[in-house]
Image 1 (spheres, rainbow, N blue to C red):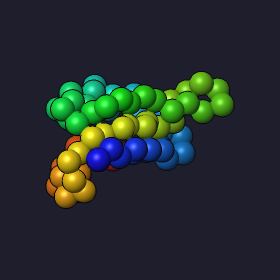
Image 2: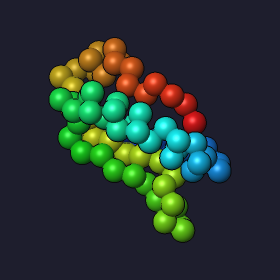
Image 3: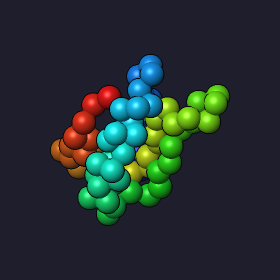
Image 4: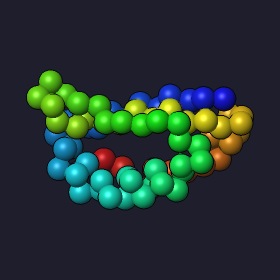
Length: 73
């Protein structure tokens, strides 16, 4: 079962996003068996403002049992 996850950063959070970017990629590497594709979302000026992930899990219970975001913006 595929899930589309859209995560939008809070207002004026570009600096924080860049600060945690390496951890974000570590998390994505840890989840690679479920990752179908991912990418950044851009604002009108071309700055990162969020992410979109397409994840594949066998069942909803598999998705809800995994905590892959270790940080908050």
